[in-house]
Length: 403
Ligand SMILES: Cc1cc2nc3c(=O)[nH]c(=O)nc-3n(C[C@H](O)[C@H](O)[C@H](O)COP(=O)(O)OP(=O)(O)OC[C@H]3O[C@@H](n4cnc5c(N)ncnc54)[C@H](O)[C@@H]3O)c2cc1C
Image (cartoon, rainbow, N blue to C red; front, side, top):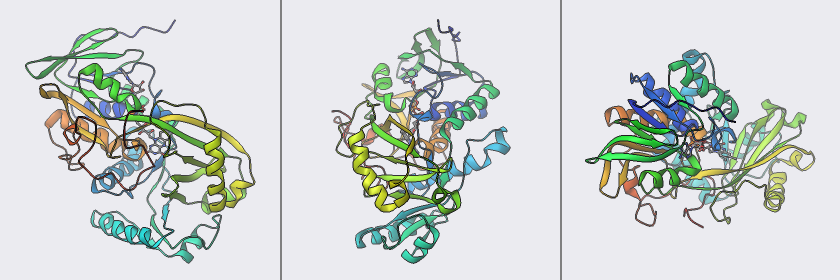
């Protein structure tokens, strides 16, 4: 029988969800000086999307928010060892986003300008230079690429290990196998939470949940248009062509394929834009075979080697592919003291930034990480449609949350 966790009866803040967003938020909240920080996880830490991710960390975003969150998170990962004595395995591998058409070149050049104005080290690389820097990629295919040398990847299971050590070391009360089941609200203010192990009185709550965030919202009486969809990742056998010095990271935006080095082989991932949203964890071999051809055209050695690992898991998304950061909104309006945080499928690249921002909002109502004024739940209509343009640099996620 699973051990029973003791849940305290009062807390300074309760964080729902022990994925990368909730756990790092709990750590930032503790660091901000709150004494009793409670982290509720209905299963065990990391059992959602966070342990199953590919680990791509990119500050080359398509919006100012994405760039700022990516830069914050990269810096956090790079400084983690000094801060905590344990890191998430961040490697600044360098990341290309190649262009194949003239309109893509035009967009990339505009994006680079925006990103550089925000302080990101990123540049345009011509097709010959790209080929020289990517000796394992088939040459002569691109019109050039944007390139950020500081983008890289983390090791997602190690990130779970790192945040577990961090929250326990900081004195966060971690309550595993304890589900959040409802929000207690008095006079428009949070007064506590209901859990599977009883009630906790608290003036502050942070709601996270990754692909399960909409259900967390329903339990709280808050409509959150966030969904989940199948996402697939494979790791090939080792091959000298995949030596890290020959294999910078690449995102082929048009096909939604990305790759990075992994244990002597290449890790690559894909999302099917045609697929209806919903929880899905079976490996879709048919779609993989389709994408494998595109992958072999880009990185020919992948067509000649076998696979060491394959997996599919439910990835979180938001309809506009942007994060959700703002107050929880109930039937009577914003609930004082309650906040929602979602990384919209970018929890490795944006996670620490989203977590710091929601911790700041919870403690002081503002944050220096990024401008969140447009990123709250009030940007969605009753059908979950956002009034913002979607982030153009994202996986081909669905733009609706229901099948
Ligand atoms: C296959 C795959 C590859 C990915 N690759 C990348 C990548 O390369 N780069 C990138 O940036 N992102 C990637 N992602 C996305 C990234 O993993 C997520 O954005 C991130 O993990 C979300 O973190 P989270 O904490 O919001 O959600 P989760 O990690 O899912 O955590 C939410 C937690 O909340 C818990 N929970 C739910 N309901 C309740 C409740 N009622 N009470 C208590 N607890 C509850 C769940 O059990 C879960 O542990 C990938 C995702 C997948 C699936």
